Length: 610
Image (cartoon, rainbow, N blue to C red):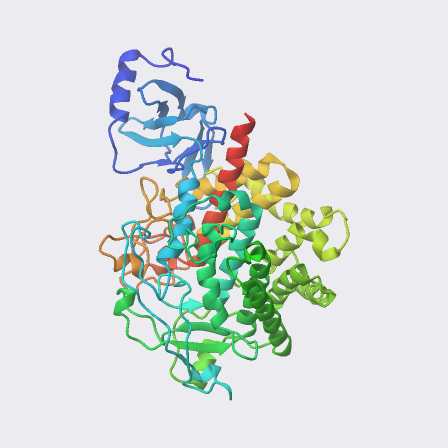
């Protein structure tokens, strides 16, 4: 409801303020809010980072004031990270779709920020975050109309890949040539890594299972959208699963004949910031490892189940994936401690490999996840026993509930167990005790959102929240955990806090950046991403930047210089050489689209109930 607050302000002063606020500002000044948009029934807040007194107004499209507040009416809070004084403006009462302007006026300046309220504000965000994978495709050109303005030549056919000395066997000695085309470039570089790809696929398929109807109708405009490769009687395959198949086909080529899986396909050292078709370095498959093999096993077990309804479109794939998963798991049981130690490997084998290590020296979590997925797929008690054994080891090592990252995938297995509890246990029984662990883990973060957070968020209130890739593995993933909690409880607090995590990513944060390329008024625009840097049109849309990283592994190298004494939540540079804070990766984007889609679905359901 729109209320004109003429009593609060003199009409003449208000008219001047409205004119000033309707001017476009190039910077967001002290205003931090979601720059992509709000659903009508969603909680809506903005954070004002100002110590001195101010007045805040919200104007609608016609210039009428629909909300006002002054700083004395708002509780002042100190950012627990930086100590900066902030105040939160709550405008959740605005539910009418439209374009609005938030104006903040102090003695010296007037700042303004436009925002929108509309139905389905995150559908295009989800679409672009998913379409980012089409742009990441190796071994093929991206062409119009699918490239949507970002066409490029093909690079890395990967039909002449060498077996590295570390991966040599009697059947495939050093220098053996294999073919391993397709898949996605992992990140800002041009290599392909099984560990990270497996984690990405896990979250990908879990997101699909959670919101099948949503993804079944989401059009990505990719070459496979029309199911041209399927027979006439095949069930329509969702674009999301078509895109995933491009990566799955590559992953299958990374399994050796004995069931073990190569850790990565890579050049010896990183290529420069050039187009894929300009790259000339030789490509190798490197070392089979337990972690890669188990991530592969979990992925293929999941895929065998997810693609079962689409057997006519992909004849024989599900059986192939199941066999590959079981072979990989058997290899891991026989080789339970083959870890990827790149420095040690380079002392023994040549050429030296200096690209991303994705090393992991604890594989209880990989055994657990793979065993859970195979148990769901097959019902075999042997997999359940392995899962139980490794669950005990994980609990002894980690104690409390541990959130998932690419190097610790136990939570993927845990959430899959919750979603498929009866299939694994073979009987109907309550899962209250299991769910409680998730809820108890989340509760302190929800408390912080209500008490100490200046951004009204369950993320970003502790210095430990900020690390390499924290926007994904910290913020987006916490939002996804909240979505699972909402699924199991129906408690709206969890949905609200998932939305708050997305608000943080989209601009209500310490830096004021929308961390998604191509979105918002102050987006990440210079990511550490070879495909963006080398493209004539510039930055590709829909990619999530890694985020503030106080470790600053790139400091003083490649021209990366951070401001001195910058707080943890501001340790971010929108600067191409800053790989520590501004790279993009496939595993970060998967959490972005999973979170955005989950919220979009639920907001739409709420709208229908109104």
